[in-house]
Amino acid sequence: MRPPGIADGEPVPVLLSVHGGPMTQYANLFFDEFQLWAAAGYAVVYCNPHGSTGDSEAWVRSIRPSEAATLPGTGWGGIDADDVLAVLDAALDREPRLDRDRVGVLGGSYGGYMTTWLVGHSDRFAAACSERSANNLLSLETASDAAGFFRFEFGATHLDAPDAYLRMSPISYVRDIETPMLILHSENDLRCPVEQADQLFVALRLLGRPVEYWRFPNEGHELSRSGSPRHRVQRAEIILDWFGRHLGGRRPAITWDHPSRG
Image: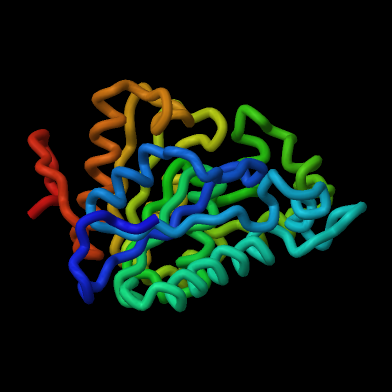
């Protein structure tokens, strides 16, 4: 999705967005967040990697780990991560105006997982926003309101294959994260409890890495879609302000207290 009103030859910053799920999909329909980011001057790149719905059952199951008793695949962070980066590379090659030095990545839930995973395995992003993320799959399997679900998705329990859960967890690679990171999470998130964000934030702080963390009170996993209007506006402004600082897109005129805007 290209931003409007860009002069010929003007380099364009890029936001790579990864959807949640992973068993959901992006469609060619109006999406308010993409429109908002494009209006702020970003080209938005998005796709449906392996593990998304809309294709075959084999496509969905391809990201089961190798430890799965039936139909093993590459695991989360395998072929799905390769797909996301391949689409980004294709977009950069097809559109020479896209600025390779100003690429950000963001997503929520599984998209937050993939964001944290990518910056733990690559230094190509100028900034990242990991939202309501699954950062430690081993602890999430007992802390989530869907506790016990991963044994069906991964084909192995966390009791029998804890190493697989940790291998696929972005927190296991936190020492390799150098990208400036924005973490957004809701304190009443039951699907991905706030401890998932706390683990990432504390580790990055201990390592002295650039990180900013916003916790939203009285909100759940659906903040971006059905949260209170005030918090939804604040969240949108925080994201645009963060990438504006790091990628050069238009920053919003924030009127509420925002100590990071200096």
